Image (cartoon, rainbow, N blue to C red; front, side, top):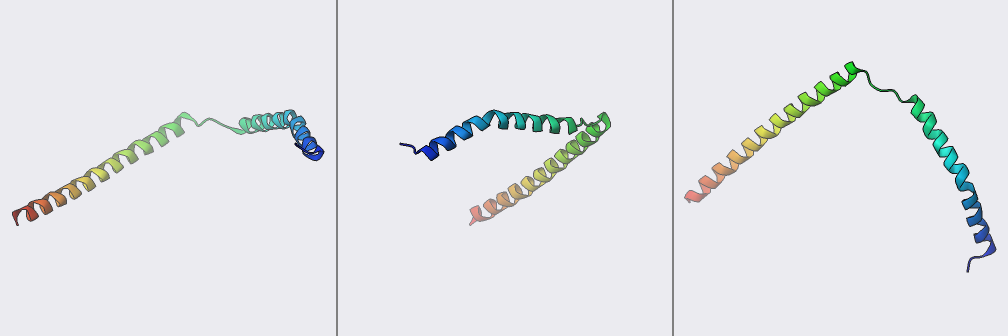
Length: 82
């Protein structure tokens, strides 16, 4: 069974929830007022960078895959003759 001190601590915690929730939502609203949306030019610029990066990584992985598969194929062909 809980002691009187523990019961008092639980009651205090439960009573403080509404105030803590109000403070949390107040902080959220304050921070959301500081948020700005990017301009159309910024969105176009970052989209271009992402598309170019994706193609460069795709090319890199294609060439890496091609090199590894050719190397393995040659090794298998070399060792299968023996």
